[in-house]
Amino acid sequence: MKNFGLDIWGDHNFIIKDDTININYGVEPSLYEITNEIRNKGYKGPLLLRFPHLIKKQISTLFETFNSARKTFDYQGSFNAVFPLKVNQFPNFVNALMDVSKEYNYGLEAGSKAELVIAMSKTPLGAPITINGFKDKEMISMCFIAAKMGHNITITIEGLDELESIIQVNREFNAECETPVLPNIGVRIRLHSSGIGIWAKSGGYNSKFGLTSTELIEAYELLKKHNLLEHLWMIHFHIGSQMGDIAPLKKALREAGNIYAELKKRGADNLSAINIGGGLAVEYSQHAHDKERNYSLSEFANDVIYLMQEIAKNKEVPQPDIFTESGRYVAASHSVLVAPVLELFSQEYHEKCLRLKPVNPPLIQELHDLYNALSRTNAREYLHDALDHMESLLTLFDLGYIDLEDRSNTETLVNLIVKKAIALLKSEDTDELKQLQDRIQEKYLVNFSMFQSLPDFWGLEQEFPVMPLTHLSKKPTNPASIWDITCDSDGEIEFNRDYPLYLHDIDLDEEEYFLGFFLTGAYQEVLGMKHNLFTHPTECVIEFDETGHYTIDGLIEAQNLLDVLDDMDYDTNLIDRTLKQHIELSETLTLEEKRELLGKLYLHLSENSYLKTIQAIEELI
Image (cartoon, rainbow, N blue to C red; front, top):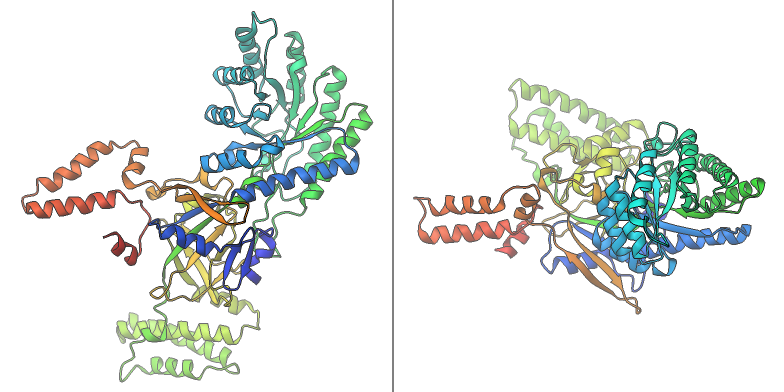
C-alpha cells in the first residue's frame, strides 16, 4: 500500500515529508510536531486535532463547483447550502464552521429542539436555516420565533399533522398582525427512488420521512384553504448518506424535478427551491481496488444542474434554486484522531526471547536449525517443516513430554520462521502466504476507545484511513491488528488480507509511536458512546495565520473520572464522601498515611480514563 493510500483519500490535505506526515498548508507542520507540543503541556492519551482551513476548503470547493456548473449551463437558479447539525454538533467544530463560511451565506439544518437552538444562535441573520425531522407544536413555535427574529428559516413538513400544527401556531402568533411573519414552508417528498448501500432506506416508499403523492396533494389543499400557499417555498428529498453510486441520484432528481414542476403548474407560485438533501460521498478507502464512490464532485454538480434545467425547460417553469445539506463532505476531513501505541503484543516472538537449554528436545533443536538455515531456495520447504513440527510439539506438551519453556521456544521459533519465510517469498502472492500473515500479525494496543472515537467502524464496518505519524521513510513490515483499551473484544481493527494494514516494528521502550485516524470529523464524535466510561478525547483547534504559522487554540481536556460519573447521573458528592470516609475511618492507617493516600486518590480522580505510560505516571507523581 503506497504511502498508506494517501493519494486515494488525502485530497492533497496532507503530504509526506521525509519521515513524517505533514499538513499541506502554511509552513507545513508535521502532525507529530503538533502532537508533541500538546503532550508537552501535560495532555496525554488520545488527541483530536481540528483544522478549520479544511472546513473552509470543502465549503468553497462545493460552492465553486456548483457555481461553475451553473455558469456552464447558464442556469438561472441560485446555489445554496446548509450544514446538518446531526453530523457534528461539537462547539469547536460549529464555531469554526460558521466563522470560515461567512462569505457563502452558509446556514445550518436542525432536526431537534436543541439543534434548533444552536441554529438560531449561530446562523447569521439572512443565511438559511432548514428544519427537518419530526416536530411537535413547541418546536414549530420556536421556528415562528426564529422567523420573528429575522431568520431565513424553512420548516420542512414530514407529515400532515405537522402542517395542522403550523396552521394552529400561525393563528396564535399572527391572528392580530397586520403583516404576519411566518417561516418558509417546505415539504419533504417520499420518492419512489431509493439509494443504495447501508443508508438506502432513507429514500423510497418505505422510508421513514416524507409525504406520498396523495398526502402531498392533501397538504397543497390545506395550505390553499388556510391562505398559506404563498409560503410554500421548497420541496425536499434525501436518498441516503455516503451515496457511492451516482445513478440513484439521477433517478431521484428526475422524480423530484417533475413533482416541483407539477406543483408550480398547480398554482404554488412562490415555490422556488429544491433541497436535494445530503449524500455526497467521502472517499475513505486506502486501497485502489475498493473505492467508496464512482463519481467526482464536478459530475455530481453537473448532473444536478443539468437535470433540473432540462425538467424546468420541458415543463415551462422557472429553474429552481438548489439547496444541499452535505454534512459528511464538509466535516469528515477536518479532524484527525491521534493516539499513541502502548504495546506490541507479539514482541515476545523475538530471538532475544528464546530460552534455549543446553540440551533441547530434538524437534526444537531442528526448528532452531531450520531458522538459521532458512534461505530463498528452501524457504517454502522449511516453512512447511516448521509448521508440522509445531503441531507435533504442541501434542507432546499436552501429553506432558515437554515443559513450558519448550512450548515457549516452539512458538517463538515457528513465528520467526514464518516471518522470515514471508519476507523471502514476498514476490509470491499466494493464498498460503496471505493466510500465514494472519498467523504472525502484530497486535498494536492503542490508547483510545473504538466505541468513543470510531463508532461507525464498530457498528457499520466503515473503514477509516489509518497511518503512523512517523517512520514514513521506512517500509512497514508488520501485518497489523489494532486493539483499543476497552475490555471488549469488538474493540479491534483486525488485519484484513483484502485490505491490509502494515505498520512498523517499533521498540516502544526506546521511542513513542503514534497512529493517525483520518476523516473522523463526520458522525464519529456525536455517535461516540461512553463504553467502559471512556470519554471524548482531549481536543484542540489548529489555526493558521496569514503568514502560514499555526497556533493551538480551543483546547478542551477530556473529562476527568468524576465528571464522567456525573454525566451518568451518579451522585459524585456522595461518591467523594464515601471514598474519603473509607480512608479516614481506617484503623490500620496512620494519620500521615491517610493524608498521603487521600492526596494520591484525588490526583487520580482528576485524571481521565485513558491509560498513561510509565513515563507519564512518573511525571505526574
